Image (cartoon, rainbow, N blue to C red):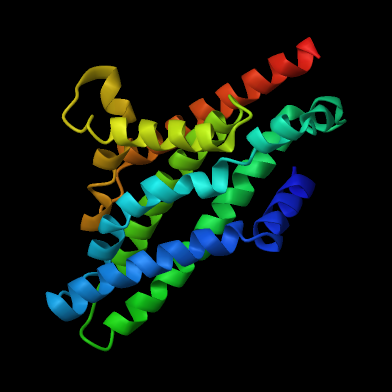
Length: 226
């Protein structure tokens, strides 16, 4: 698994993907930061991360759409199917590599926190808790994006499926019952308040595990057929 993780992580930065993802994020977040800090005179780091969710919705496919779709299209997925490594280790390696890029992005976000410290005293505790929630949300998004990528050989279709799904679940905030489990944005609401709720943490982890398992099942069945 760690060999796959290392290989996939290197690929993100040996190609433009990692730089495009982080660059797009920082450009948009810089605009959000300017709006809150210089236009509205807020020094709340959590507001910046809250508004960054919409950015995450649209650029997560940059990290996930190639995970399996490109290999399937080029025919190199046969290497996965015949690899001595388990499907589990391959999927987890790719998943953790994408999560690592997210962690680097969040770490860079704290440049804005340092700048805010020159204007006031933003809460480091709230900033860290909000960052945790943002990472859990991103992790959930990555798990679904990876699942979408294993369904098709087209990166564009994988990206469209991923974004469409995220937009649909964004309208489930007022839902009740089993649908509320998929309301990822509403689960984020307590983190900017500095509250770590076990329910929300378990919800994000359950969502991620669900789509990781579905990805493994699909690839395992494909491997069995071949």
